[in-house]
Image (cartoon, rainbow, N blue to C red; front, side):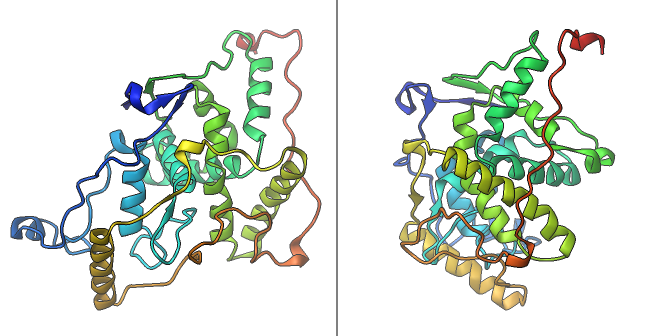
Length: 307
């Protein structure tokens, strides 16, 4: 998968999307052939086509698709996306979602397991920088080398579906390092991790315990390093056009008529900030001051290739 950013959309080593580019929004009235061809879909042919792999880093296009098909009252709510009642989408959270999908393996189960570990990584400020430092010490023959553009090449990790339960955060880190993903990109993806924790803070006590440990480490890192900075030109909110809102309301009417519309997820009020420090749904009885197990020290005086 290759992404080419023009000189116009690239400054100071950071890719900048053209947020004013029109995305060719379809009208509500679809040709009969298109509707007949999509009658098996939950949206009955309405809405937008899913962006291809080559479009995953076109963030405004991803935001538009999420507003149509991934909001909290849609068939396929995407956890981790910050979206308000006017269907405005936070670009930072959409960027994190897209970056994770660009790196993830193809299989459904393996992809879900990879994205969970990816989320736990980006939710913890400065952790990726620490991982790079450890990687460089442990692999002096293969140090981290960031991609600087304007052409970017992403190689998805290959993991068999049967091995999905064995995916760890180390697999995620290695795939990011081998793809030359810079810490600035992981910092920018922070809000995706934060809103993922917020959206998933429910369920069994085992899930609470897992999320508690990640959130504790997130709070510790925030105290030490502060909130990860955004890439300014790739931040802010994507705002739907009137045609988008017409389309979204059409999709909602279809969902209601099918009896499958739910209110999963958490909306933001218009004007609310997309960032916060504490998870509002976290029960104080689970709060504790523990941290995740640290890495073992890198090998000293040992050739990694011979171990």
